[in-house]
Length: 117
Image (cartoon, rainbow, N blue to C red):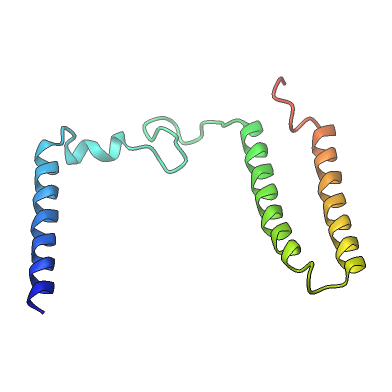
């Protein structure tokens, strides 16, 4: 029990001393910290809040999220291969992948993936 209390005390002393040293050494003041920090999306907080952003970036981000979720859906399909009938599994996977490819073709046809525009 004494070792645990001693370990916790040493950890707290080291943590508090590092926090105090970093606060003293830090060049930024507390008042300047909020004005210098970007929002979570990376926009500059000092500029206009109605600044337009690239719709191309937004579409690519949405595509990334869609394909990321699709991978999460596809991975369990491989695990269920052993426990389901082969024909049902193959039809399900084929329909799912064909829907994905049709969506990708549609996005490609509409120029979402074209960065030159």
